[in-house]
Image 1: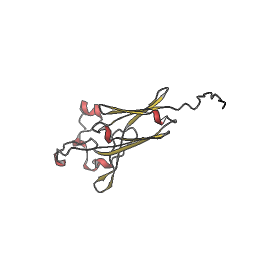
Image 2: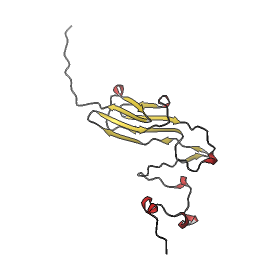
Image 3: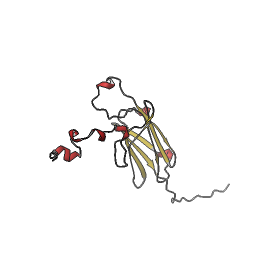
Image 4: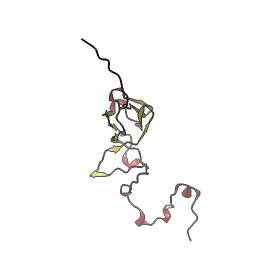
Length: 160
């Protein structure tokens, strides 16, 4: 008969490591990443060379703007490259790890270090010239004013 699971195991959905058979243990990079899983596992392209990381973002709209928010903690503003067109935004950057600790001395390592990028296709066209990017306390906010295609203006005819 199985022992009763502890409160922590029931709360987090974990299992007791003593109950896991050796065949059930897989390397972390072999785990599938589902759409709702926030933890991204970096695939290995070449031996020891990780693929570029992908930023997590929130994208929403207000009546006048499309707003993109992301966390860029540990990245200097001058190390961010933000490219925008009327229908697309690309955010690129790099987070450099301080080499204070030897790899063998880590007990747990989840922070992402290296280059990252994210391209977001916008749901409608924006005014590129009026767009702004603000970084505060490691939080990047892009404000992208929507173009109003239904807006009409009257042109006055001048005579020469």
